[in-house]
Amino acid sequence: MSKLIGPFKEIVTLSEAPEKGALEDSELHILRNGGVLIEEEKILKVGDFDTLKSESKSVEEITGDQVLLPGLIDCHTHMVWGGSRARDYTLRMSGESYEKILEQGGGIFDSVEKTRAATSDELRSNLIKRANRHLMDGVTTIEVKSGYGLDVENELKILEVVKDAKADVISDLIPTCLAAHVCPKEFDDKREFLKYLENDLLPQLLVKGLTNRIDIFVEPSAFPMEMAEDYLQKAKGLGFDLTIHADQFHIGGSQIAVELGAKSADHLEASTEREVKILAQSDTVAVALPGASIGLGMNFTPARKLLDAGASLAISTDWNPGSAPMGDLLVQASILGIYEKLSSSEIFAGVTFRAAKALGLDDRGKIVSGMKADMVAFPVNDYREILYNQGKIKPQIIWKNGTRVSHV
Image (cartoon, rainbow, N blue to C red):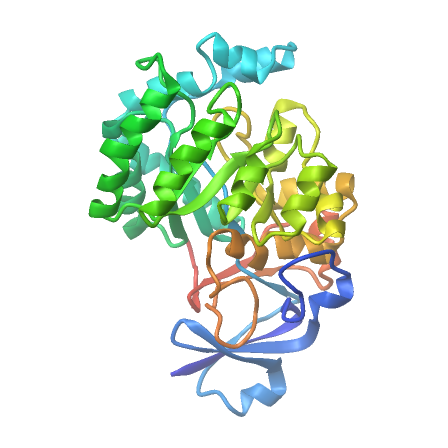
């Protein structure tokens, strides 16, 4: 049975916006006094509310001024972890570097120790709370990485937690295996650790159906380019999609991402003109993670240069216990926008359909016929108010698969 939702003061459909390159706000395609006709879980039609009213069998009437956007998509998070890294944050505020803290046994190693010690029930409960908070911020699709296990047993535990949590989370959870986050203390040789993952973990992921996505942190302090490329080639040969932590502190990762046809290259704070050009000429999505830049006190991803060169730019939170503990997508995207001089269209595209592309999803991110009816309504009468308030205005109404979310 079809259902009409509306009227909305404005609907930001993004129907005319391309997948790559710079965007003007004229490409937002603003529909005024619009409605969305839903059938089952998908958008059937978008148009003038009064016209659609005659075509619908039921109406979900919206009162007050509301601006409708596609459901937001966070395509890079680390939302399963144990403990806290407040100590690390205090050290960074005093001037200690992220890499130095890692060398001293803090950073990722600290989260690994606490995550290994946590029970599956504890990790699951915390993931559900974080995912529900994200949903209330308008995020209806969330990528979730492993990476704080660093051995077969605990990496499987984390990914099974993600799988089990789906039953109690309204948002879609998209799992990614980041077992190659750093080399654990139990291994003296990084190459030996990667072989261990290739032989003992990757096949189990396929058998258990835990994920079809593999990630790796490409850095001299984590996994150098040559080692990372060998590991990714193995994963690709098994049929996994690839995504890469690239160019955060040193360049090289984005080049591997493009050469191997990765869905995305994420971070890119260290990318130079050469890496920008390589990404722009590829189909790999460049993912900016402003939360990490804020958390580490470092430069932002060169988003303006990437867009002007013709790249597809997504924006994500990198929500994690260490470098990006905030986890607020709209706040971070708004801040990135003002520093990198992005248009509203570029920001909205970066947290909707371009983020979907980074996850290999083509069924969400725009308010057009045939897409999933994932939508968020903000209590404003002008779309510009959303970013102007730098994320402080949150959605008042959220729909997931066409169903209104009343509470979580």
